[in-house]
Structure formats: C-alpha cells, structure tokens
Length: 88
Ligand SMILES: [Zn+2]
Image 1 (cartoon, rainbow, N blue to C red):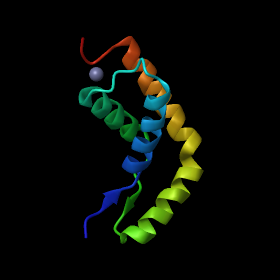
Image 2 (tube, protein in one colour):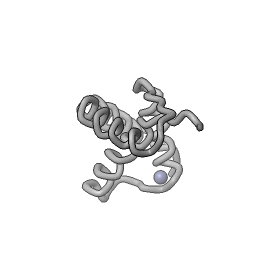
Image 3 (cartoon, protein in one colour):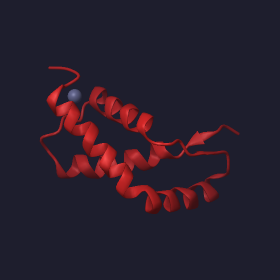
C-alpha cells in the first residue's frame, strides 16, 4: 500500500471552493499546480497508509482541525500569484 498525503485532498477541496467563488481567478492546470505545490510546501504533510474508510475519517478530522490554517495559506499563495502570475 502506498503512503498518501491527505493534505492534497484537503487543499484541493478548499481550492475548488475558492475558485468557485472567484470567477476572476485563472483555473488553468499550470496555476492550479502552482498553487497546490506552494501551499503543500507550507503545510505539514499528513501521510496515511490506511484503507479508504479510515482515510476519509482522517480527512474529515484534519479538515476540521486545520481548515483556517489551510485557507490562510491558500489566500496568501493566491494573492502572491495575482501579483506575480506564472504566465501571461
Ligand atoms: Zn493560469
């Protein structure tokens, strides 16, 4: 079984919410990947090797615990990208 960083799911989830509420943001794969990697670099990874049932329980738990921290990081990275876009 492969180790899996559940922070990826959680960050992606929050990012999808933010994108849905901000039509002005670029949603191309380049920007999404850039945002994801910057945010994941700034947050502690949470690796799991459990089956999907236990994994989803843990995802819900980490979501509740870390939600404000993750949102803060996401907003910081998104604002940075608006000032210095990764492409034209
Ligand atoms: Zn883009």
